[in-house]
Figure 1: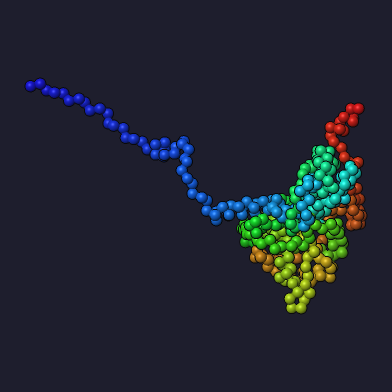
Figure 2: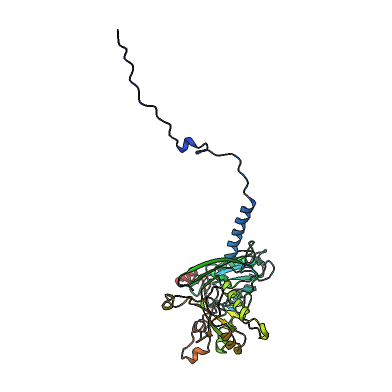
Length: 369
């Protein structure tokens, strides 16, 4: 009997591998299935966050360019003028344009009442759209005191600006979200604690730098007349509007006129000043600012009632008379005063008049001729 040889078994069947290309029905294939609509609440949240970011950068409906005036750029008459020398004042900007033959309707510029500096830009309103276009063509790129001027169409004036220091890139007004983001870094416990919160837009600055034109009255007078205070022991508070609001709250809490006492309010609050490097390594809050008062006789009252009181961050405030004069504003603005008494000779103030205008290419061509 013949033996039948059965065929040898072949290799085992391969198990299918669950690759993504086989497991997914839409691998590299356009998925045309209907999508569920985005929830309204999520969409609104994103819109609010977008509008808040625009407001923080000064581009919201109540930006730094606004000062309660009608829309001045609808006809193209408003200009943005940037890359300015920090010491330039409103009169300098007006001279830049009028000496060139332009009819200036208004200049909107923020001036720090303590340093006399601008945020390096401003807005200029001209008489007609044609003048605005000519100004852009003739002035953009002009070298003024070593800086190439930037002139471009400005933004519309809408609403009223309530912020201070919008030139640091932080507007104090809120957008559609109805709030302002306040950031605080507190070293009261020996280590940094950071916090962020949203505050309402119901805030009025002590000195509105975009609408006031008397910033120069604060450069020397409060210090010389003994009306300037040093306020220390502060955490890092941002933006400037939050610091200003914090100082207002301290005054309202301890000097608000309760119990028959006379109410005392600050007239101007400087920017927050970081501590010296030798002090920064020590535990605690060491930032400080300066506060101006309306009357010199109120200084001792404020020191007595406010020094050592607790701020919203949990630390004690240090209050004293401001010492020394601000030599920077004296030097940069070319003004006299204490600088003469100290033996210093004030530097002649550089202005941005017609004599400083030049376009680099034109200058080179003139020299070659």
